[in-house]
Image (cartoon, rainbow, N blue to C red):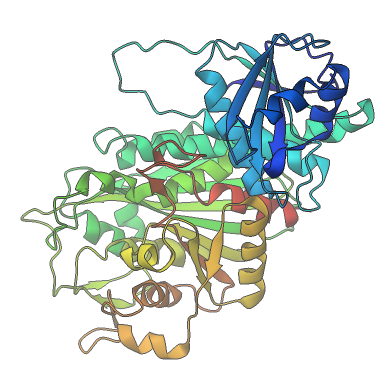
Length: 497
């Protein structure tokens, strides 16, 4: 990760290769831009009079050797409309970082904290800028052998107005680094191909999360059989890769404080099993473990923050493959809880392995449970890539997670779970069936999961549309996004003691 610091250097005293200031629509100058204009005898005003730059979001211009400035480059970047949000500020920082990476700039200062951002505090703005830079510069190149020209960009400074601002800005920067580190871990895990990121590999990565307050256990197939996680074992039947069940226990809060449980779906490759998927984009099914990646990313972040909260994590991990030994449509399975499941479609396997994980998590008596899963294509149709689906059995918990999602920019949107939806998963030969049909697919999948949490406060995040983005965005060039990490850290921070 590129080095980022906070500084009180003004735009005129900045000694870096580039000073970056914002220009709003209609060529409205930020405070820093006004300082430059006054000190340079209206150099900016004359430049803007040419009409070469309007201030549209992300547009870019460079002036060299501006009078009175120490930096050799003055970069003007459009911030768009005046109603700038923290999410747009984060996107802006990502755009700027990638553009700087293409230049010969080694060190740059960003003068964005003087922007008006919907009532946001200085700390929130510093967090958004820093996280935007780190996420915007992320690239997954682990398997590329051809050397690419290395970027010289190595240092970013986020400017604040006064020495009195440094303490809160530094704290915000450290939090942003922890969250970005967690998201980058989640992205790396998601982007690894299925022949690398196996259930065994996921277990190894969990064990690598070393911290004095964190205990990690990784169960192999024999331990899973001994425990009786029959749903996980059934889905694993068709694979030559052994399953893993991962248990993480972080005790950062008071001993008497109940833990918050995080449960992740870890399908390291999902062919659909006997109900095999169509071949187009099947390669993207390596991302079907992004729920487990989110859980591990959260633990990475909260251990770096040393957050005073108790959190337990539970990950069911396997492949879903077709073979002579694979479970089949029409089979009836018995879950760890004892609930019997009629299998109508072997491609609705994620909910089966989550059922065991949710049951086991609830046995540990947590305060509440949050699960993360790339569960349904129906959620992609409903919400696209802009928000995860948010469902649950406790309105207060739903409201808290929703609020955290909007604050963090890792957005989730509530969906209904009316009692009548439960009827769609009733089976004629077992307790429930593993699909409720095409109608309300996201909701009926959540209804299935609800049968395994009893009355425990629980929310389900369907990240099928947000976990990866092959077309790319400002904050993610391509691939896994790290969805679920930022909102959960925000939620846990608000619930810390």
